Image (cartoon, rainbow, N blue to C red; front, side):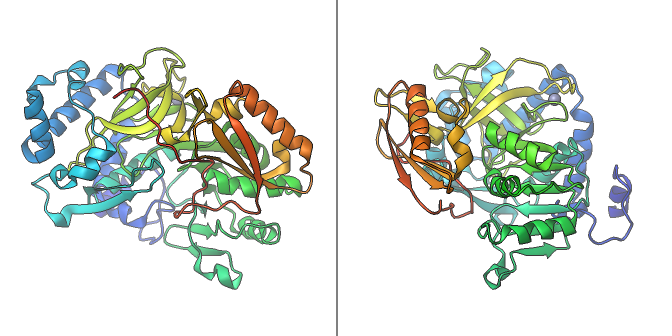
Length: 469
Ligand SMILES: [Zn+2]
């Protein structure tokens, strides 16, 4: 069986080669689920809107029947609302099912597990506390992740990624030899050169660059914050880009417009980003032609719900992503409120895919700032829609909100930074919020990372609500 999968690969692969899968975890090279999903996506991505919707309704019917018959929480919810799965005949009917929240999952986890899945088929996952609500749940062991990687490979294909490509990885991994002064390790199983994100200083970065140049990567997979540090160092020291590089693959953190600009200029290649979750209910990535996020309809149903509880239809309107995943029947998430905000667009992409497009994912609700008069301000409005001269003289920056109407700006300065730069930042930020914030500055030597090594631009200590639901 395996041989026929390998033969059906769209890429030439040496038979019997052990390390053919590159950044894709090698075990999935042997997974029928992985290849079935991947091959399916090669066709379905070009389907018409009608055909995709028909497919979604079929998957939804399967999921709802399963949830009603096997998942105690959904049996209860259907009974309480007087619904049966057969009552859901279209996307409007679907809206009758109440939302699933992080709190509900936290308080009802046992009842969310499908009774026809033995514990041997469950894999436990947790999400970090970036939303303020840490949460545990289950996915289908070996199945959900195999499908996930098939979707990942499909979207990375759009910028030329192929199985077996060489990748530098700069994503918060701990490199064990780093305390002995070796800041990287090579994993031949997936052709990844893993670099430490925790030791990038003016003293060590020349060593990183020499190592990358010698490795000749096809791609760099990175947290935007980590690759930004490398890019700034390269700019400052006039270091030329890596000629073999096809694209930067940037996930897991928001990629801000100024970062994309800096990275594309420094590395002279495409920056590709996508939006996904540990919960694996929604996945959306850029395409060959465009930086809008293309939401995979084969992955689940993503609704964008406005403050008024209605689906967002206006251009440039902000809504919360509410998602239903098709790839996890062990612990189904149906109409799950992700607490992430997005701006959809009705534009059609020239790539030809009939997918829902998101202009921007504004990030987590916890990435909004509250003014004195209780307005919610996005980071885009406060910072990214403006140009700050001062930013070129800053190594790193972090915002902290502890009280409504107050903001602390923490800055790691370079030697060129002066009092005028503080004035500029203060003036432009206050202008953006019509003086709705008291802003103070704090100068520090280093910005700490989260447990998983991620950088957070805003530490929001208030609990933010969107709409009245
Ligand atoms: Zn497109």
